Length: 562
Image 1 (spheres, rainbow, N blue to C red):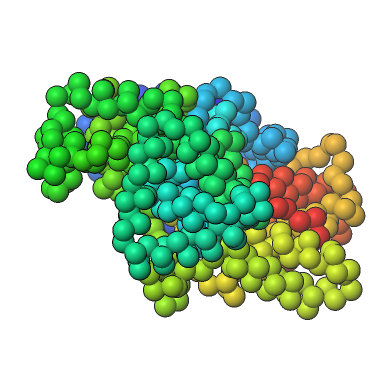
Image 2 (cartoon, one colour; image 1 turned 180 degrees about the horizontal axis):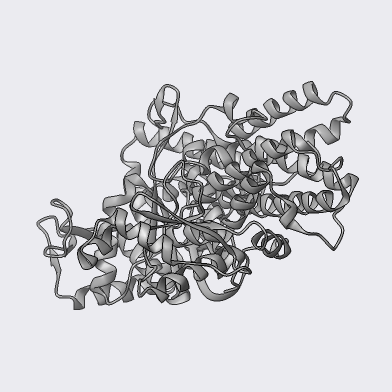
């Protein structure tokens, strides 16, 4: 891993503490309101040194003396903390010289696999499920930036009762003439027919038996039908800059005999029983599962496998493909299922994937509900967002050509939706307000694009010279931007390690705020002298580079002009 200026600073602090026989493992961000860059809390030393943390902090601050060329500028005590500040003469030059387009990037050394989205083929993506796709795609981008060769997978349920019903609905139609919208209507019609005629269930299960029996024509028919659906879903998700490397069909677990292999492995555990309904059940007692989750049905009375068996087989496949990092993104309503799945995977001798559970996106009226018909389709929502962005651009820039307005509106609408969703920690609910998300100011995606465009507008007028002296940057507003810029690799590590893209979102918004304060108060092109102008131009360029990288990690297009 490349060592950046911030890391060098921390390492130098650690070395100074080591000279005093003190471990620097507890280094942390300073308490709020403290003008420092790193703090060392002395609480843990109190018992060993038999002194109060306040006394220890004073003694250490008095002993530690950084050299003249050190990256550390000052050491001071504040209550029980020893605070270390960056040397504004040595650090800025080091920092700005290393911030380019690849700042924070690591060459791939490990293999990762991320499965996300995985919507049932008979459904059009809605806004609630878009959180899965946006989180998953952002995690993929962050992992790729921080040293992983990543495969992105989409699990296609092409073998369940719903798909069998859709296949029956298509039985008298020419598949070559059908598109995704046709499939959605056919499914609605078939579902309505099933409600009137429950006897159709026999036809559904007969079709599933043929599928599991390996009937090639049936398998081919199921895959053709779901293929049309998947391409329709993929097109909609591409409107949010989201795509996938692999679409993994559930039916492959059947016709490649993987279901049979999984069933044999489960039988070998000695935990499979036959219940009173003649179903095969896997006992999961004494595995630390919540009450009520100690049994898993793995086969129906007619011997057809349950979804859980195919999910187990698929999970084992994913583990074998990427041993360094295996991730799945699931809604919070899948928590119990995933706990069961993880228990089974461990029972078979493997480590389950890392899971990112996300909470729901709420409408102003409450939780989205399919039954109540309150689902907002993603395609409709993105059109509404794009229309709102177009209206805002037309108001601000009436002189632009129609095509240019449309292109910008599309990119701004993506920024509004993606940032509005990803900026919230996955486990928290989101109440998404489109009118707020599309604004060009505040905590929004368009505001970040606007900030990038501001930085770019300065550099279009004059690029920085090769030689510069960043130690000239002494204003509070300049130092604030420098400090935030130095923390980008650390934020990337946090986001990658915890699989939480909101760290990147929060960071680039903080950077945008600091830069806009600088932009409004500090002259760049009209600086007092050429040396100062050169330094400030490099600060602008560094900000532009980091904003560009941060936006890319969130799947948002940087706009050269707003």
